[in-house]
Image 1: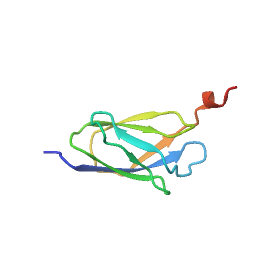
Image 2: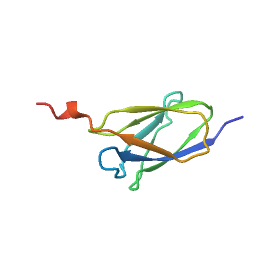
Image 3: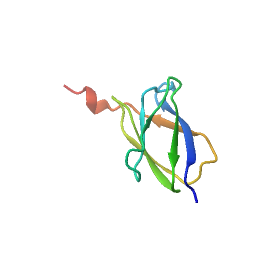
Image 4: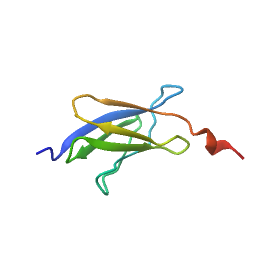
Length: 88
């Protein structure tokens, strides 16, 4: 059983490489499975199935989806600025 497999990683700003605190991280297959990155951009989320799909979002950035096949490595996820958010 893969229940309770721990996925951990960091969310960064793609342009500057700085950590992104407060980014939302969800498992698309599991309801109510969300978490938020901390001040270092770090998050931990538990999954009961692999592979699984993460949805990572932050205000002012493009939402990113990432398929996770194993939980061996610490993820590094880079979000790019959503330029359409700044158009008048």
